[in-house]
Image 1 (cartoon, rainbow, N blue to C red):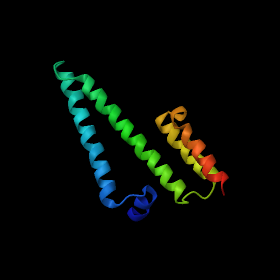
Image 2: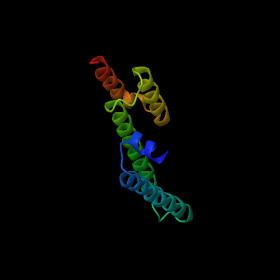
Image 3: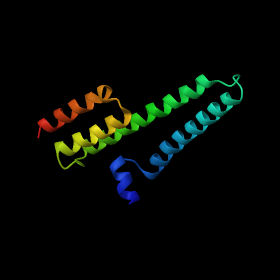
Image 4: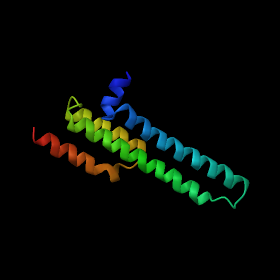
Amino acid sequence: MMKEHLFRHGLSFGEHFRNNWSLTVMALKAAFYTFGHGLTPRISGMRASELHNEIWVEGRKASLNDLNHRLENGLYASKKDALEEYRAYAALYNEEPLMKEFARQIERHCSGK
């Protein structure tokens, strides 16, 4: 199961672990800033928000890398499957307008076959 999971991400175990460790560290820092700000306004609530946004951005980047890896390595059975997964990720991030470029990439990639 782990081997299949890593294959679908296009990552080694070490890369996968480092990515998730980095996100975990950012999440813990954000949680501490959030909690600290609740205790005293001297601790930056803004920094907590910045870290939450960084986590979101890194997650979105990782998701796009996953989608790209699967597309470029023939891991979708059809164009329909690729578009369905793209829509699921776009809905997750509620950013279909920002991710429309990937839909165009699917179109370009699949039109050459």
